[in-house]
Amino acid sequence: MGTPPSLGYSGGLCDPTDSYDYVIITTSAGGLNDWLTSGSLLYNWTSLMNKHALEDGLNCNLILVEDIFSCSDYWNETALFNDTAAKIREFCKDAYQDWVTSYILISGDDDGDRFEDEIEKQIGSNSTKKSDVIAVNIDGITHYLIDQDADGKSDIFYNTISDDRKPLKAEKSNTYLIDINGDGKWDYTYDGTLANCESSFDIPWSYLMVTIVLVIIIVLFILFKLGIIYVYEKEYEN
Image 1 (tube, rainbow, N blue to C red):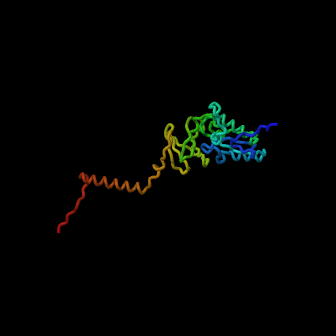
Image 2: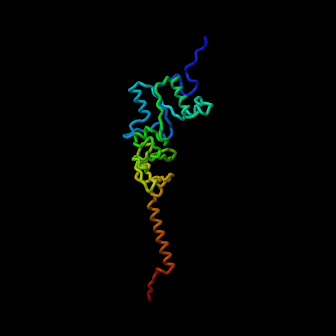
Image 3: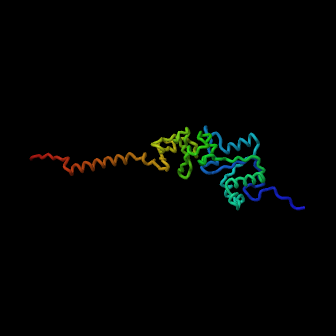
């Protein structure tokens, strides 16, 4: 008799010595593999997995789609079967065979705005409308300008690190002032490109006073040279 074929997946990310009942596939782009919970963002992937573990007895794991794409074991020499969907299908096959996974949640971005649909639902933006979210990169971190009332104008700045939401000020059409840290000063302007405006609000008073005094001295000197003002001397006779 021959050796029976192995039911395990050849290679891949899933170690057959591990076992996960519930697997989440998400992305690390924009910090969407995890985020801080708050009064309005009630859960994240960690709290969701903890909930399933405590209430349903499921052993959970989170996998990044970037790791799936970089794993050559999921690649196919035929271009038709080497796209995103094909690689994710191969990972799912690996998970079912090596981890004996029962449930796989594929986290999506329906409108392609690079903003996790689960977060959009919690914040109140439309997860099927791309134009209500604008991604801005500040110091290498992706944050978002969000239109909450579907009027075509951004209303809040969403800080993906602190989970803070700050009101935006519209200077004119499609131009916004952003206060990133909530200190009451506008830090950036956005009109399609991001610009730092902090320095324009932080001119030291000492520099301003010195400039004013110098201007007054220069004006007086010019008026004196033009003969518009005179210096009178009183002569005394001995």
